[in-house]
Length: 383
Image (cartoon, rainbow, N blue to C red; front, side):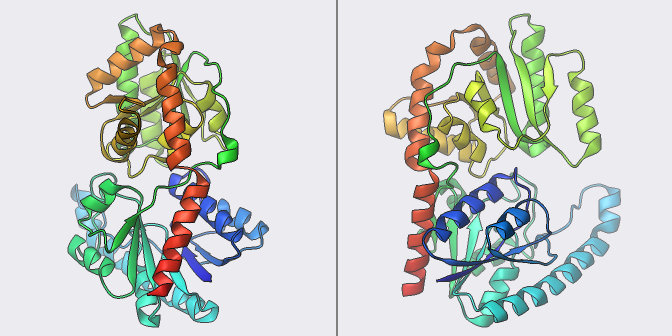
């Protein structure tokens, strides 16, 4: 079996990228021949080539509309749309040439908002898989080009298939079970499970600093909790942003408070193992890679009760008939959780932490992920 992967990004810190790298390495162990197309030569491109995986680099971008709010965005809307069209026209030609040379059995695009792999596969009459990870407009404000209806029609067309990372993502995109399977991402190998470690006096946020990830809302909630005089636990922010103005705004907000910016951490798992809790305040987390990763590492999770985070908590509730994390929907509820955990003996949450780890190990191991995708490939090729 020969697979052609199209990756949307190469950053080693992105959940989608981590998931596909875990998948690629697992498939290598099964003897699958892999070819990868990256948008640049950064991050995991180097890791993949060092593993002997054939990688191509070509520029492409999301098949989506440019931002349209505000006078500046309105004035630049058509020029930006034209630029997207030109970039993706060139990208399509390059990917077509690669596919004709490599002759893959399946083309697998690692996100739903890039349609070049689908178009190439359609032209060459080979199967294509969309890996649907996003709520698109709900989480990142992405408006799919030309429409959501056209996107759904692609999924249900001949030789097109989809892997959704949660049931919620599949339901939101209104895809029938016959056309889209649900396979959770694999966050860590089974062998990496360790005993639950003693906790240090800090909360942790891990991920990109942006509104969709709830970074500012978390900081505002923490400051409110701290100003009550009842919170004594510091907050560590392991992440970064490409928006320097947003970063400056966050750092200005946190001045004078026990909040530390760590930058992106390659091995964030070590911070998870020792944290009193990981906070996941994302508006609509597609899967919640960081949530599963934290539970796998024996860390209590405080998460917004929406989308992928909710589904992970619901999986635990179905599994044990009790909660495996602390949910919130409003900022006031998060404030209360922060104060309570700051003042509690963490042993009060030991059962919840153990349950969360067991669910993560059962559902979100790399072995389970690889086996699920491998079986899906074989099913597609049998049709």
